[in-house]
Length: 227
Length: 194
Image (tube, rainbow over all chains, first blue to last red; front, side, top):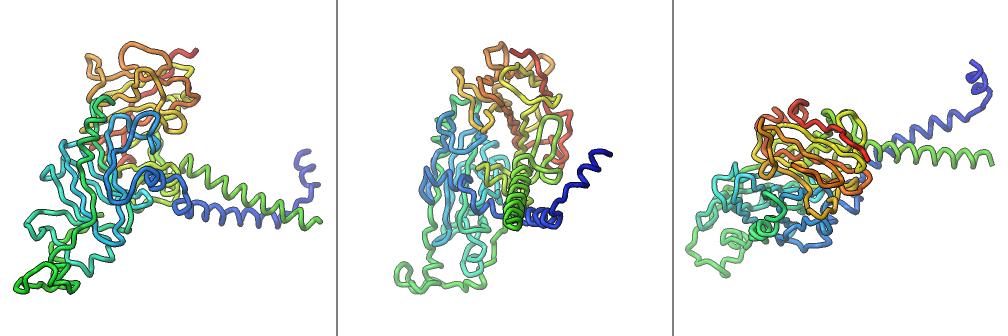
């Protein structure tokens, strides 16, 4: 009671204090929401320091050079930072084992697609990354013009990271496995004949007798959307 | 003058409480973003497109690239099963049974998430290289000095931490790490301290 009596004699600017706590709530929300966009040490920034766009690189995982925190010491990894702003990107991973995994992330590290060797029907895959907004005006199908199967992965953003994981028995196997992982390719898609035709460049590639399909009709046929 | 003092106090209080509380929740999680199972903590929605803002902020800040829950589960521990912080001054026994999964691993890191340098070059045990006991269970000894069996060096770092990865779990969780049962996760017991 004495403490309360003492405290009641102190005149505090309660209105200011209440206003400060209200403002702190706004600052709290703004800090949390803005952090993904201002973080200078997120995965994209860390990998940008050691890589160029649209190329696969082995991710060093030795104690002195690990570019990302909490990396698995017994998982070989290779990555590609892709940029779809100009062209779609073609990934050709080789999933040699059931545990080998290809995970695809947005630029902010959100994992929107993953496929493991256990799920894949074949070891050598062909994945075409297409941004959502471009899908409506492009011809993409699950069969290439050469008849090869391809998986269409619709990306929520133009930039992102493809990451291959391959668990190994011990760190001694990291280098050899990483070399195998590094055979994965990540490159801008070469324009298909149909795309060239659609863009009015028929004389560059095809004889005029090649049937031109209606892109609007073909657009959604055979495409698959992945989370 | 009084107005100026109040304005400065108002601004400082708002900034410290606002940024401090955000930082705390991003670092330590909250009831809706993390799930604690014994000493093991998991961020329920990490890596997901529909993750809550705190999880998204944490992922950006940490720089990690986790695979989402149905393919891989991640648990971290920075305390023993009694809730005491892990320290390199003590030996710990991590005891459990192999997971029903394609692959799993338990790795040790320093407090910043970097590998702990050691002459053995050993940072983890996994389902392919761990030595099991005759009853099929495993015991890992987290200790600064060499120990017989599955010795995981903790070096001389102040606050070691552990990460358990379970890849393609079969029955670890029915619907992601939220439903993981405590009894299938390893127990971390403190043994001797220096």
